[in-house]
Image 1 (cartoon, rainbow, N blue to C red):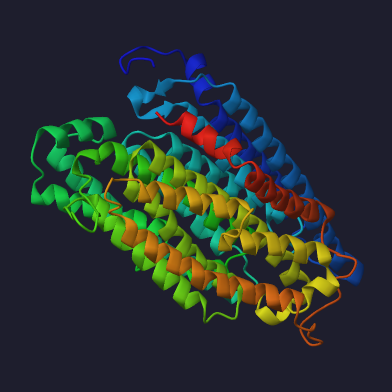
Image 2 (image 1 turned 90 degrees about the horizontal axis):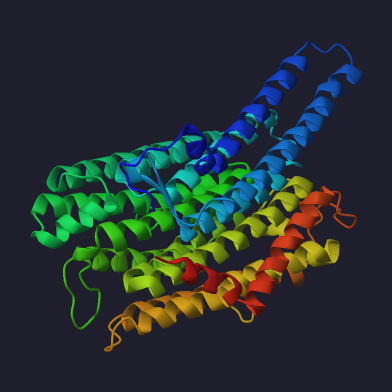
Length: 516
């Protein structure tokens, strides 16, 4: 890795930052096309034919913008593949390692699928602006994944957060979208304040914002109360970001009210990047104050804090999900529970624990994007996303029903789907974290939560496969009038879940091998 003091030409810098640069340029191009289309279609209409023309122009603009955004993301993946194995930018604040490159590809891939889900959405009247914001959010994900310094982490969080707030409130035709954006903004701003205050306290007591230097400082001196407060505040800020209980109250309204592609991206990409960064913060920066969450040897540190958040998230998320009658709200509360499962890997610690957490959150993200893709089709064709809108879906669209079954069963952890192996790796690592099986209590809570979740996931499948189609809310889906590309996208995501269930080491082994 290059020294922090070594000089670097602009050409070398551009090469190392080329993935982010490609996404930014793509965002600007898409924005320009969107603005040009908006001006061209903003005239006053005087006839039915003229009134229909702006809608047709908007659909064409959506196709163009989606195509350019997707191509830009594919080029960005190619740029990531051309990066060196190890390098540093800006004095070591941003790093390139096999792990950061892998998760940049994963984040770009999730954004790619979100773009494909955006294409058929008719409610997004300004596709250029929307996709540009989505691409800027992707840049925030990439900054988060590659950061080794607290201030750059905070900048990445803000770039991501501000983009997601706008994406959540983007549908001006739905009052729930404005409500989702407002609540997400208020809770997100609060979490940013907690995070920044925690970072300032950590910096004030350690004299540095570098994660490696913070670790060295903590290892060589006793932890002062102010520093402990800073660590806890930082963890609380990230608990908001990952929607861990009791800091999850923004998630149900945001998931339900935001445009479906926005909800899919919020639930997937932001969570993956947040867990990558949170794992790096606690396992690198705060490693000397790990503490212990073992039932027979509790010790103060960040580990018992995350263990409590994990247990609360699993119980609250699963229990509240039982009472839901809306699929998007059900997915939101289950997301709280899945965040709790992922935290188990961080509590276990070490390379194995971190890799298990990242494998699980990646599987979860892929599954959730697919589930939201099905929700998008059903909502567009029936006008809603309650259970009644999914009633008898199998008789109307076997493809959608089959894909949704794969996603729900994977979330429930049923073998041989990928979600089962994600939970298996997590629980195995937690049980073997110490010789005395000190995290057995947390694994028991997780198993109990998994049993609860199986019930409400099966309720969704019962509605889809058993219940009769409602004549009031269900429209004809036999011919799948949805976009063909969207059908292919959902099918590819379902196939990925099946493939990773058959060959989990294809991803899990790669993540573990990329660990420093």
